[in-house]
Length: 270
Image (cartoon, rainbow, N blue to C red; front, side, top):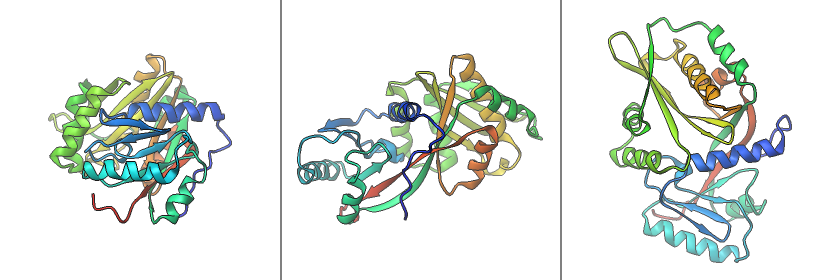
C-alpha cells in the first residue's frame, strides 16, 4: 500500500491542525494514556482510531524503548499493536521506521473538509429527495450506538465500547435517525462540534435503503443543525476506496484535506 499523507494545499495548515485535534478529541476513549509524546489508546471497541497510537510529538526517549513499552501494554490488553500515521506524525520518518520493522500499512483513509456549510446545505436541499416519506428525529447518542452497531454487525463488546466512548468523550455528540412512515429505521448519523468545526460520524444507511438519496438528506440535516449551533466548517473521515460515499460528500462541497493510514504489527499475537 502506498502512503498518501501530504496535506492538500487548498486548506490553510492551521485549519488542518484544528481538524486533526477535533478528530482526536471526538474519538477519545476512556482507555488512553500519554507516553513521551505518544497518545496511546486501547479501547476494546471496533474503531481503530480509539485503539491505536498517535505519535503527536517526538518525545525524548529512544524509539526502541517506547516500542517495547507500548507492545507490552497492547499485549496485556489482548489488542493488536497499531499506529495511526498522519501528516502530523512525529518524527516524520516514523512510518518508514515502522515499515522497516515489519508493520503493515492498511486502511487508507481520507479526511475531507467543507468550509462553506451554507453551500453544502443548499446542495443537499437541491438534490433529488428520497422517494420514501422520511422523518428525522434526534436521539441520545448512547442510544444510537446499538442501532448503528446492529446495522454494521458489530459484536456486543464493540457496541459496549462505542457507547462507553460516546458517554465519556470530551466533545459532546448529537445523533439523529431517520424513519419511514411505518417507523422502520433507515438511516442515521452523529455530529461532534468543537471550536467551530463539526465532524460527521457514523453516517449509515440501511443496506435495503441505499441509493435513494437518504445519505445526502441526512448530511444536509446534520450540517444545518450544526450551523445553527455555530459551526463554520465541517470534516469527516472516510475510507479511500468508499467511492460511493466520497461522491456524495464531494457533491456537498467536501474535498480531500489529508490522508492517514494505520501500521499494524504482523508479529504480535494480540
